[in-house]
Length: 470
Image 1 (cartoon, rainbow, N blue to C red):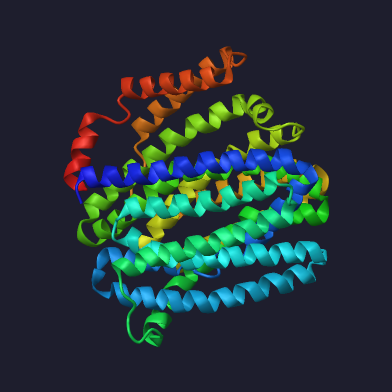
Image 2 (image 1 turned 90 degrees about the vertical axis):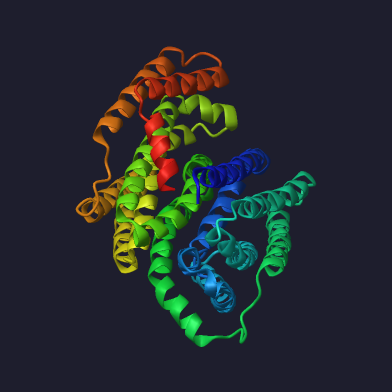
C-alpha cells in the first residue's frame, strides 16, 4: 500500500469521524437542554450500564478478523460466516444478562425497559460490525467511513425527531433501536454484494478458533468498558441521577475528542502494523515511534488548551451545568493516557499477546473500581474524575514496562519540541482567554502548527521515509 492510499484511508476515516463528531455534538447539546440534568442523568446511566455489555456480542472477534484478513485474504468468507454465527449466539446472551443484572440492581421498571431497548440497539450494531470488519481488513476505508457515518447519524436523526415531538426518553431509545436495525440491514446488504458466506455456515472449527483468539481481547475490552463506564453506574447508586447528569455532560465530550484523534488513524494503521511485524520488524519499529510522536503532538495541545478554556467551553455548550466545569478540566488529562493505552493495546495485538493485555486491563478495573469506592462518597463526581485519570496514567506506565524493553518508541528530541510548542501556545491562550472563543481556538491552532513546522517536529524527510515504508 502506497502513501497515497494510506493517506486517503486516514482522510476518509477522519472525514467520517468529524461528521459523526459534529452530529453527536449537536445531539448531546439538544439532549442536555431538552431533558434537563436529572433526565439526562437517567439517559447517561442507561447508556453507561448497557455499554458495560457492549463488547460481549463480538467479544474481540472483530480484531482477530481484521488482523487475519489483512495477512491472508483467502479465508475471508470463512471468517465472515464464523463471526456472524458467534455474534448471534453472544448477542442472545447479552440481552439476557442486561435484563437480569438491571433487575438485581433494583432499577425501576421503566429503567429496565429502557435498558432492554438499549441492549437490543447494541446487538444490531454489533451484527453490522461483523461485516464492517471485513472492509477494514481489506483497507476499503471509504465504505468503512460510509458505514461509520450511518451508524452515528441515522439513530441521532430519528432520535432528534422524536425528541422534538415530545416523546421523551422512551421515544429516543425506541428511535435509536429502529435506526440500528435499519443500519445493520444496510451494512449486510453491501457486505453480501462483495463477499459470500462460507458453507456450511456453522463451521465449529472456525467458530472455536475465533472464540479462542478473541476471548482475551474481548475480556480485556470488557474490562476497559467497566472502568470507562462504571463510574456513572456507581454515581447513580451512591449519589443520584442529577450527579450523573453533571458528570456525564463533561464526560461525553472526552470520547469524541479521542475518537477523532485516534480512530481514523488506528483503523488505517493497524492492518499496516500487522503486515510490517511479519515482513519487516525495522519498519514496524519505525512506525511505532512515529505513532507515539503523532499521539503526543495531537493530544498535548488539546489537553492544555481545553483546561485553560474549560469554563468557557462548558458555558458555551450547556445551560445550568456549572458543576461540569471542573469535571471536564480533570477528565481532559486522561485523553493522552487513553490514546497511548489504545496504541499499546494494538501493539500487543500485533505481537499476539492477548493474554497480557487481558491481565493489564483487569488491573485497570481493580484500580478504577477501588478508587471510585474511595473517592465518590467523599468527593462525588470530582472523585470519579480523578479516579479515571489516575487509572489511565497507571495503565500507561504498566504498558511502558512491557513494550519499552523490546521497542524504542520515544523520539525524545521531538517530544521536547512538542512540549515547548504547547507551552508557547498555552501562553497565548492564557493571555487572550477573554477574547472570542472561536477566534482564540483557531488562532491557537494556527500558532501551534506554526511552531511544529518551525521546530521541524515532522519533517519532509519523515514523509519521504513514510512513502518508502508504507
